Length: 161
Figure 1 (cartoon, rainbow, N blue to C red):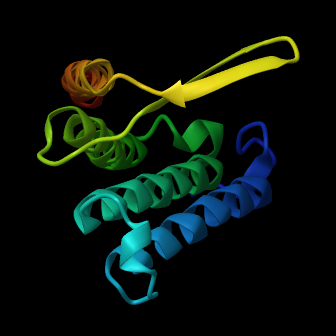
Figure 2 (tube, rainbow, N blue to C red):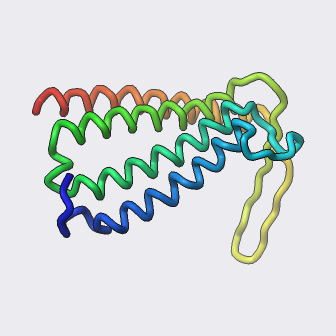
Figure 3 (cartoon, rainbow, N blue to C red):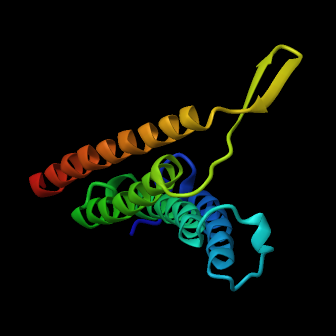
């Protein structure tokens, strides 16, 4: 790993601090999901694995930010960095997609709200459940498609080196 000033726009310390904050927040969410940090069960409206997936997304985003700063611009061209980016990136995208797919297609009741703001005027109300599921499910499918496309693209880049 490189420790010079060319570690990307924010530098090594900045990327470690930024990544560390994301990792810490994600860790707290995962600890709530694992019931290590107790939360009122009536305040959790999704299966605990969905909560853990959300926390995992933040943790992995933090790791990826720290890796970028740690490797620096030259280090990001190495095969090791490309593999780490691939593995963490795929994990992040699978977890992120799974949350949207669960909202769209998972069992159970969903409640959606909608709001519109034009200048100083805001309106809000309950949203259409079918439309909410279609939007989240469609977004999850689109993310899954982009995850596969990203995997193919990154694997080509790794094996081209």
